Length: 232
Image (cartoon, rainbow, N blue to C red; front, top):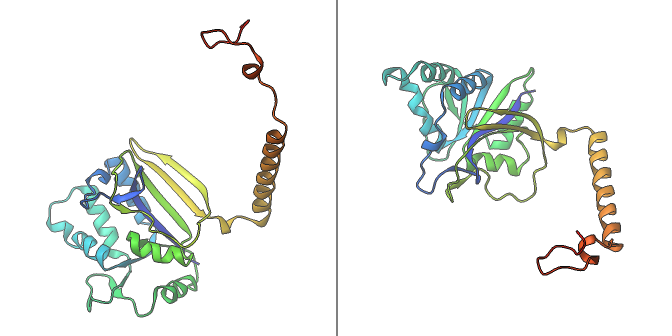
């Protein structure tokens, strides 16, 4: 059964684009571009809305624009990936893409019922948010850049409920931190029960300490004019 992932570059304050739509801060260096290429080669499909589909059309003609070797490698890999575009305004799409025939839940259900493994990515914050609302995304892969944008397009739109995730991989590049999470529903029942038990135990210990506060040295000591406890 394929794994559905949402992979995105994100600022430290949780945005994928600045207030003016700028994404220059997310440009990868050679090491990170090599990692992006490795991950892209694992993809067996891609789902997106109209906006991201049109943004990615530039890679269809990258070989004619004099891109570098890493960019050309990405372009060749990207063009070969089967894509499904969700749009109510487009009537045709280019390259190895097709328009969605059904709603997103039905399309994802068809993907999930395919035999064998695979990795299918979803793109675009709003589109990915619609899948997150239905709890259809299996993994979230974030590339956190050292920049605070102060506003813009959020990586996650408002959701109707909390998403509990489990951190399963991290990797640090020169300036970017890669964080890979999966849904906590993937955890075993035993692990979830153990986490809940530890949480209850910590809360109980905190309540007992509040109920019976201890007399600290600071509270009991006679203070000098400098603020230090007398006799210290």
